[in-house]
Length: 357
Ligand code: NDP
Image 1: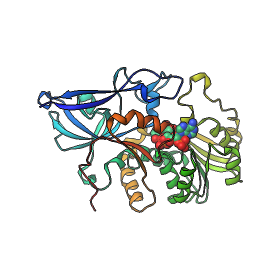
Image 2: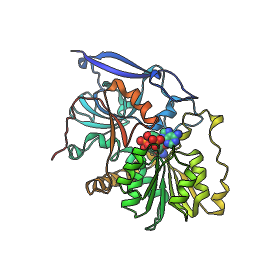
Image 3: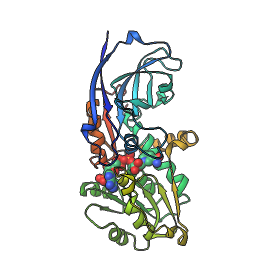
């Protein structure tokens, strides 16, 4: 019997403005599981991740992360958690839970190339945490924070001053909590609303400020009069320039993201003017792409972060949007700062593996 499918399609490049809900199209179709061919897998989407890096796949770029732009007019794809409903492919069986790159479709037939972008979630992990955590704190954003600090900011001395921008988001929250609760830094966070600032303080950040309401240079000077040792940069632009001025000698800057620049055409992107600070202060500024470290550090990350979450050193926060048809809206809201913690879309009505008490 044919099953109904809802998909979200990408319309066309957006190069010079913020993406809007009208740039996405919701479509319906059907899949008959009886038509599954040899080598194919039928996957039901349970949770979907909306992430800033997808913005790059929605525009013309000189250099993409690891995969090119979305095709018009086809389903988008991003990190997701799915349940295998039927399989005629080696390595997958009905009932397996998979994570990885999944199309924005409530149900999808995946060929071998698409299967190559998936991993099976270890059965022992099912019920250990909400499945959506594997898209956030226990997944790619958590790994980004953990591995980039390890690779770029270490060695870290207890009491060093760390500043995290985008601090109330998926990566920023993990980065700030790790720097505070695992490394013993004095942590300053910036975020785009007073509610987010209050939350950061509640979570133990020593200082936090709303970059939309106060001057970043003045706020940092007040919070860290002797300067910044570690900057976890999620936003780029003028904030990076300010930190270069206020960094201490031998500061480390994790260049993780530059979200303040993602909607701008190339010629309007912010030109940081004070890079000479890198030399005079011997600052290390290093870019990072999480996928480079999955093979080397993925297993260690999974075990370590699960422990941090269990011990309360890292609290996992999520912002959930219900329904695949609202995935475009979820993306637009996330880019505009509507999320606190990891922005996820709950696609299936029920989590088939609720957390074991
Ligand atoms: P978030 O959960 O932090 O969501 C995005 C947030 O960005 C929004 O909530 C908003 O928060 C903030 N934002 C939006 N526009 C601006 C702006 N103009 N200036 C400052 N802040 C803005 O997303 P993630 O945690 O998933 O990603 C955070 C960063 O990390 C991004 O830059 C992303 O590209 C990068 N990243 C890099 C990876 C890598 O491997 N290098 C991997 C994963 C993410 P607010 O209310 O505070 O404005």
